[in-house]
Amino acid sequence: MNTLPQIIIFCALGALIVFILIFIIKSIASPKKIEGIQRLLKQGKTAAAEKLAKTIIAKDPRDFVCHYWLGETYLAEDKTELGFMEFKLVNQNALFDGSIPELQFRKKIAALYLRFNQPEESLKEYLLLTKMEPHNADNFFNVGKIYESENRGDLALGFYQKAISIDRHHTQAHASLGYLLFRSKQFGEAKKEIDLAISLNPEAYSNYFFLGKILKENKDYSSALANFEKAERDPEYRQRALIERGSCYMAGNSLDNAIGEFEHAVKCAKDQASQETLFARYFLASCYEKSRQVDKAIAQWEKINSVNRNFRDVNSKLSEYRDLQSNDSMKEYLTCTADRFVEICKKTVFTMGLTTNSTDVEKFGCSVLATETKSGNWLNVRQQVMLLEFHRDTDPIEDDVIRRVTDRVKNQGYGKAYIFASCGFTHAASAFAENRPVELVDKEKLENLLTKAGI
Image (cartoon, rainbow, N blue to C red; front, side, top):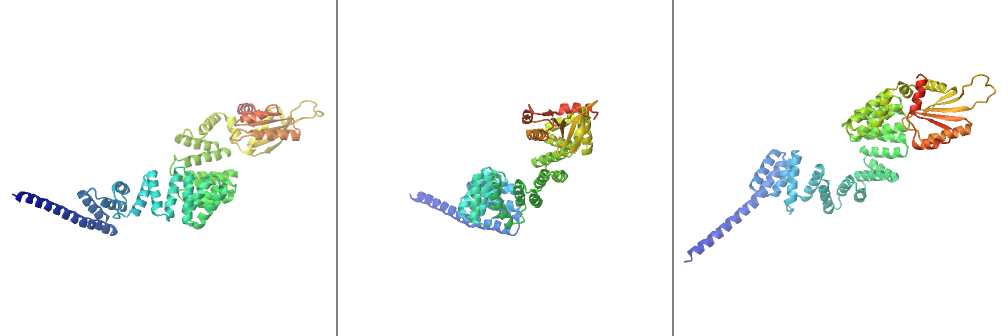
């Protein structure tokens, strides 16, 4: 009577024993197989390690320790995306009970999140690392870099300062703190941090770029040029450093040197559509324009326009010079040599019924002192001297020019002044000239005078 229940009990106990034995065998075998993957990885036998890991996972897809080591294998084989997928799976499911080296895992997955453009996930990992390793400055630095990339400079600042408080010789933290201070226009403090970063690592050439920017801001162009030259050794900053060198030369009105730097910046461009390349072309065109090489300037504007039709004032420049191409007299006025320009000015003065007394070549073009051309007996008549300024600047004339000319007319006792502008006048300049002995001659009137003079 009791035989059947006893059989059932014995069968249940047997099944339980078998299950326990299987579990124990798996528990013993699994670590041995994981050790096999680790051993193969150390030996550089990544293909064999990958095959073994996949075999284990095929039998037990939820063996997340094995998923972790498969991820490590993929990373060792430069199969970064596959390694990242394995690490994410581990991060979402694994229990970090010591079977997975969590610290090593967190550092790697944080870097992978950044590489695959997931900064928020990376930030979570680095913040966790600051708790796990509170005395590791790198963790705080990396948090700061992510906050800075997200335009949260106030938070980044604090983490950079924390990294420096942990490790006063952390070059990157000093440099990054300097960059942030520079962007907030705290130039003195920024220079201290960048100088310190350079002293700690003189071969971190990107730091010279920002030091150059500070020196340029302070108008110390010679020192800025030297630092930008050093920054060129960093491939990431090379083009930007060349552009900055060109702008330093532009500020010093050394157009030939500026043209050389901008041409070099265009030649070394890796991306013709990048903002850096477009700015290099734009500044190069500006230098060509100022040095009367209008055809070359137009070529640069057209290349910019082919990439970005709304880049700064390129469209208006092309429109302006398109008109110039059909007007030979204005083209001659803008592009001729200084000696030829003086002759053009004299002819224009004569066309206005004036006689040239003297001419001076100026930065803006040419200034002429002239008197009215008289016929008959005029020896006893006191003639009034007129001041005529011929400008061929590339921008509309501002009111400060009108103020300067007005003061000169008053101080020298001239009868009147004429200001000729190839690019017109600003509203403020026109307003200031009203009811003053200064006549503004705009582009259209100037074109008519040049045509009348036979230019």
